[in-house]
Length: 355
Image (cartoon, rainbow, N blue to C red; front, side):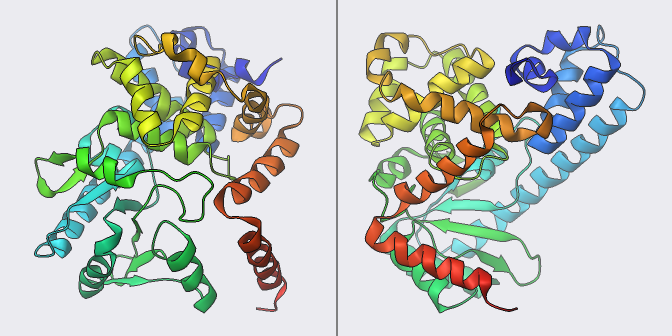
């Protein structure tokens, strides 16, 4: 049986499939969803299928607990965003939220049932020092482990070292680019910030347009080497592509935006993967651009196997090899060999050093 027939994937692809779930299927779907970071979303899908859905004893308790966690995290993120806005007042810098924080603050399509661990913002590189100083004054401190980590982030990466608030212990990632400075793909964060949308509650805080959220999500997922939450992130893309289509967004315009940001390849991976796993309804006109999206199909089976690692019951044959290959690939995409080899050597030595 293919991992695409797993109860969780069936439910995410078509919520009505849950009406035919047996008790063992429900048990497995809940365990798969918890491991994949999708329990809150599965609970919302189950709620949308009511009243024709018969949940087994105890299932609702799992969904209620997940909904409480999601609500608490969303409230915490919105509070954290308000504190970031307060810290940056007077700097003249507009912070653009990324990933989960953008979903929660704008109550976008991917916010449904979504949990996350930190807040990510994007600011102009030229204002990075001003932003860091303002955040420092308001309690956020850089949490780099040593001088090497400081140099690694500040000279090579697309963000500052993670900042942790002294009182709340919340983590803030301050980005100045979408990909590392040393990455093989050079993208255009300035275009994302230029079109970002203001939020009613915080005029100086913005979120990317839905098109840019789709492209950044695709970029983040298909350049990463960790795939434990890959299925969750792909479902985010499924929801955002569906919302973009529902709003009448042009598929050709989305492809054009991907080309402008130099993110056409990860976008192509995202479109094909979401279509395969969730039968995503694609934006109108996107199929006409499929020749531009049809390259590098040989990578698709690798991504499919990596996506199956959301739970041990779903693992496809070759999943471990795919994970290892994508981990190596993520480093290869991030840095040229002249930097990568010394970096990996340092990391290996650091792991072997006595505590």
